[in-house]
Amino acid sequence: MSGTTYIKQKASIWTPFVLLLLIVTATFTNPLYADTCRANKFHETARVDRVFDGDTIRLDDGRKLRLIGINTPERGRNNKQDEPFYQQAKDQLRQLIRKNQNTIKIIFGKDKQDRHNRLLAHIFSVNNENITTTLLKKGLGFAIAIPPNIQLLSCYLDAEREAKRQLRGIWSHPYSKPIPVDLLKNSARGFHRVSGVVKRIGESRSSFWLNLETNSDNKFALRIMKKHLSHFKDFHPQSLINRKLIAQGWIYQAKKEQRITIHHPASMQILSTD
View (spheres, rainbow, N blue to C red):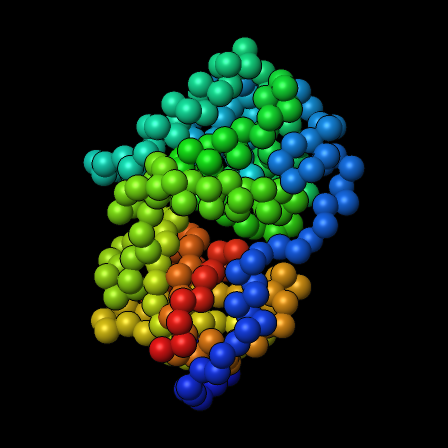
């Protein structure tokens, strides 16, 4: 990773950053939301034509829609097996939609589309029940946080915590356990939970880089973009050196290095000062 490199140092106890793990102190002022899980106004009511997996559907007018706030296990491709609980997540979403005669209510995110031109939205039953919350409570996906679409993040994190406590779904399976970066294959791509120790902090014009220690030729870094720093209260990157953490997100490769972009502190957990 190019850019300024900070000298290694023993980490201090960094209480302000640990407080980030309490996640999201934002107040929901959007009048669409009645509380942290339900809604009282919607942008649209639509019919569903097809369920692709646990977090992606197609509406009857042909538009594809990706659920905000959740990432569910993927279908196996290129002769690979399905990820654990892929079928259960897909079946549960299909069941919830069929229970509502294939009709859903929709609230679009502040970012309305992703780079695949899919709609980004929260979806609800005809009785205004949050469908993503149900999936997360059953342990059928990971709660994810990608600003600016974090209006219901607190609700989704609470639902995930309930599933973790009860060891439901993915939380009962090794699939949910973070992979030490040393054990990651160089070909690893897509959504992963990883663990490692921060050994160096880099800074470029646009980002901070948390370089994790590895005992292999593979390099691994977490990227925190400066445009997202408003979500990281009292962020002091140097204080993370020698801290062990768990992070989750989508692995990509650039400059012979595996990377995950961390958009929000909900995607990272500090474990120790060792």
